[in-house]
Length: 527
RNA sequence: GCGGGUGUAGCUUAGUGGUAAAGCUCCAGCCUUCCAAGCUGGCUAUGAGGGUUCGAUUCCCUUCACCCGCUCCA
Image 1 (cartoon, rainbow, N blue to C red):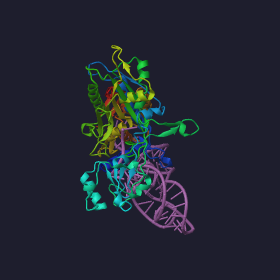
Image 2 (cartoon, rainbow, N blue to C red; image 1 turned 180 degrees about the horizontal axis):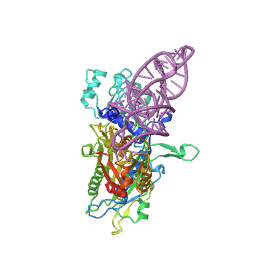
Image 3 (cartoon, rainbow, N blue to C red; image 1 turned 90 degrees about the vertical axis):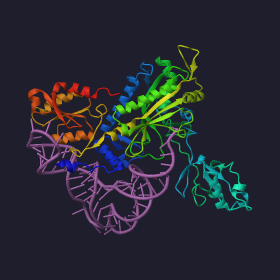
Image 4 (cartoon, rainbow, N blue to C red; image 1 turned 90 degrees about the horizontal axis):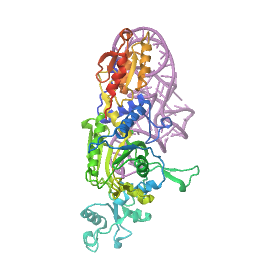
């Protein structure tokens, strides 16, 4: 039997498993490296015929769970969420207001000797005392270094001065910031972990936003940015939506779309790429509401979002909710939780799939200050109640979600011809079913084509006539098609077809005219 | 950005300073009444550029991509 021959060796490590997933994605048309005929381009990926179906399915289920059939709120009433599709390029002031341009891009310093990298503002320098100058190095430390370690290093490099140790003569109170030191002095600075001075490079800024130029003539006057997140498009349209849609706080605005970040180092397949897709919802609520406080909405959305991913099949051990520590929290956030998935390349750790953040009124306030447009909301029930809404933001990675679904679905099974299958939930499988005439003769293809034409009106289905049935089942297993309907002689005689279920390979016969209903039942709403 | 590794067909692998090999996939056909069977035939590769050489896939340099570690991830 060829099954053993074809079955891939059992994955030994998560790295091997990941390699096999990437190979399957390419082989079957889920995901390709972008521009691969030109040698590729770092950080970009193309979604093939099956990848785009899978991604669209996840996107559509998210949209349904947010905009079309949003959940029932804590008060028992359905919550209100509207959609939006804002431009990828906006006035560059948007990104100044959001903090993406300017303050955000921390200059970095590399040490040529130790190959370590530091944030420039985390390095503090203690200049060499004047009596020793021109002979000894200035000493650089990472901020937070213990005073005794600093003195130890000072004594080592500078020795005693007038019989005193550095602890006796040198105050540690006012270190110099590296950024305040002129470049020509760098040759005399000893890096925090270096043994010889002069190993630190000039601080270099990393701006994660992609720049572009508007108009045919390139100049610095018409610089613009590709959006680094979809969220800002929502904030800048807050007034438009309130004024046009009859929505009332609390309500949400949802958006799905591409975002771009010039990552220092794209890694791990589509997990960290420079062009990716987000599914973000901004929930606007009244900070003074005593019945349902922003904190209660925050808790509500945390639960909803975790349910979403679990409903799609991301199982208990592979997914978790992690609260950000104080050190990770941006200053304006009153709390952030990440929903994380155990990807093969993070195993035994986890990687972020979605962040749920209580952002207070920070974003709307920033845009109010920069645009001079009031972002205040006036409560229609109580015009004296004016406020800038607080925001709860569930921000999910669509393309990261696709990767998690692929990793979760990848199932090794040496007992079947393909050796592996993708165990997608029927609702997200790129193909819901394949229609397979048992042979390419007689009435089989005719009846199969008839069934195919009927089903494709409602479902993404494949009609596959060529080659023997085992090969075709195997191919469908590899792309995660949950059901195969096979037409044989008995179909001609009594109008029944065989249903072959992907996970169990079990078969049963059902009437051909009940196939659509069968599929409908299996795929029905999961969220 | 730094260090290490890898790069031969769609996939998995072989091999050589002198015409690049195989299995599977894929395609065309035959056969076939349920799991990649069998038969016949076919397409497709040395990541890119440069150098050394009579001749480079092999040696050297550069570059690109991917993997691992560090770093980064507002």
